[in-house]
Image (tube, rainbow, N blue to C red; front, side, top):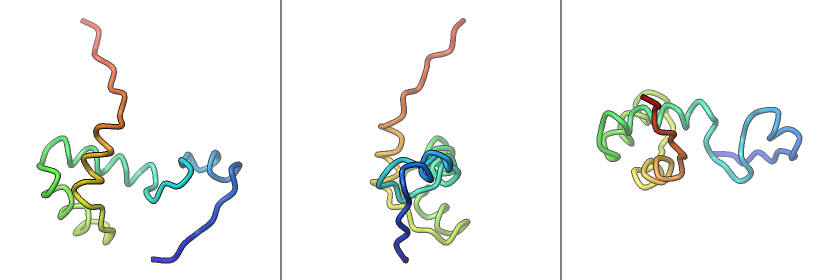
Length: 73
């Protein structure tokens, strides 16, 4: 996969984090699949659906990095 270098303003406009390989949409897809499958199955499904390999350890890391808010009852 080729490397693309973006400037800080471009990263901000695109909603990307510095040194991130995954777009916000791909991250969202990974999180949704990880919520319903094992990380290994999410890895297989993401690659089948998008052609992009996102390893199971990266899937887990994405989940652990999230700051989920508890719902208010």
